[in-house]
Length: 148
Image 1: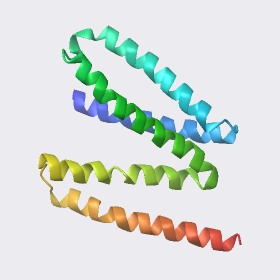
Image 2: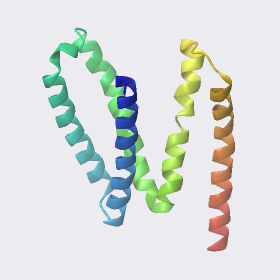
Image 3: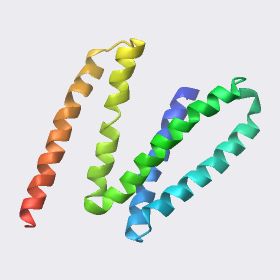
């Protein structure tokens, strides 16, 4: 297995675990702000350990990396906090699917900004994102109509 596939599998497992742990936190009635704070505290610790163990991979432009990491961290923190607070108002499966569908935004940006090639498979996948979101919205609306 190439190193690229290893990273894909690790990302898949990591994001899957996040979904399961968010649902567990919701089931245990944990405060979203506490979940968010602890998530990022542990992330900081483990990322620090990883950087310390692989210091040869650290960029010499440390200040630039730190400045770039700030908006990354803020964006991730806001997203996770909103997600954790929002799953109390709907199904975890729907919420997690919506988060995964949001990957279309950076995909379109990478096509526009970095001129990444768009094959027919990627084009079809991107075209289906709005369809998926519309179906999720319709499903939510129908579910709310049944409970009224």
